[in-house]
Amino acid sequence: MINKFIVSGYVFFAGTIPVLSQKISVDNLRSHITCLSSDSMEGRGTATKGEQMAAQYIQKNFHEMKLMPKGKNNSYLYDFTFKKNPNPHDTSTVDIPVRKGINVIGFLDNKSEYTVVIGGHYDHLGKGGDGGGSLEANSEGMIHNGADDNASGTAGVLELARYFTANNRTEKFNFLFICFSGEELGLYGSKKFCDSPTVDLKTINYMVNMDMIGRLSDSTHKVVVYGVGTSTDMIPLLDKIPSDLKIIKDSSGIGPSDQTSFYLKDIPVLHFFTGQHKDYHKPSDDADKINYDGEKKILEYIVQFIEETEKLPKMKFTPTRSKQEDTPRFKVTLGIMPDYTFEGKGVRVDGVTKGKPASNAGIEKEDIIIQLGEKKTENMMDYMKALAGFAAGDSAEAVVMRKGQEVKLRVKF
Ligand SMILES: [Zn+2]
Image 1 (cartoon, rainbow, N blue to C red):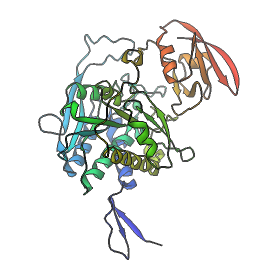
Image 2 (cartoon, helix red, strand yellow):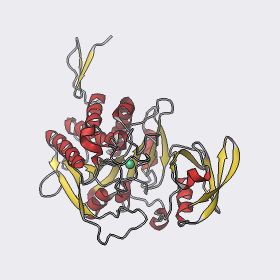
Image 3 (tube, rainbow, N blue to C red):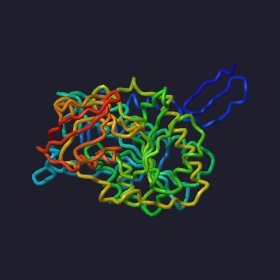
Image 4 (cartoon, rainbow, N blue to C red):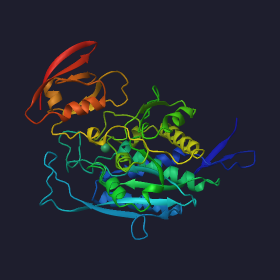
């Protein structure tokens, strides 16, 4: 049996010549996630002290890796201002105070013509409230630690940055590592960066986003990858990579995370996601529930993907659906947590929020919504489009499959 010690990424085999082998380190992932999701970071709410502490932590790591600062004014920090109406049903920003969030950005210059962006948001819901989308009833004042959402993706950015900087082989591309803020309040950080970037967007080959990669199921190994339709190169590349992960592909470039901002600038994107769970957007999303070995597997998969793209020319962007129809505007919510990993027809409900229309109508966890009003809801996109057609006060029939039986329920928005 080989006796081996892993010290920050270097593997030493006792009894043989030390082998320098650059590896994704579970210990690093654990220490980043534990720190970022500790109570001292107060849930990393955008424009709070907790956010600033987390930004300092990320900046310190980028500095130790000797990444080049690519924020504003020769620093790693990219501050931005925004206005957010706390009432989600009112988009007016008159009389709403200006707030300031911070992205943290480091650059690995490999003297290449093209750059790969590796990103993930580090902000979360703080102490609830703030229109930030807590799903826990009466949770205002409780720290939402956000270990999976998205200390997991932030740790992914930091660990991939360490991997690529410590790697002594010549990489074909430059890397831009970005930890975004303002994501939970509406993708503000990534939007602001894409509107006023610190690298020329034309030189970006593609963007990899990691948002919630900490809950890989050891039984299903399912990972949802969004954006596979944003370049014709994506699917053949993903299919080529040997892995015991079960990759579920979704073509859309538009999704509920920061890759959307890059997609809207005609940049090919991928978003890795291990799926919804009962702690989603609740104070119980904690570090002890993270599957660290699972996250390591996902990062290794991403490394292999990036290495495969080095054999190809710059990716060509392909739009996935018309931008207009891809971004439905919602005036109402149903109050369910959809199961994004569900592969059957319909939208499977992973959880319902008490007091919201779905729960009032009697929709239950594990129901599969197959129709909403006039519209069949075979997938998430159908569901979002159907939902976009309702206004507050409307009522509609929902058809759900429950234990193999069709059940009709009346939903009042
Ligand atoms: Zn979130």
